[in-house]
Image 1: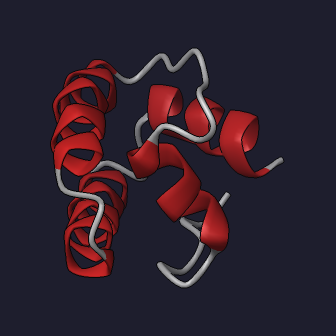
Image 2: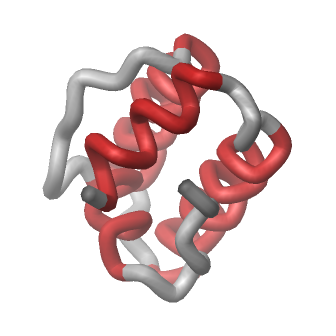
Length: 77
């Protein structure tokens, strides 16, 4: 599965904590635990977009990993 574009609203739902998933990719778990707290403290559109950008890059760089592929299916179907 390809990494969906950053414009997909699901990315923002994840970094704001509106949607939670049990992920397998450890780096994404660690990143999200930090980013959800950061965005909760400063929920401005710029901060949400920053989180989306960073999470998207993380998934893009590791898109061939089986755990990333599993997580993409979990999140985006």
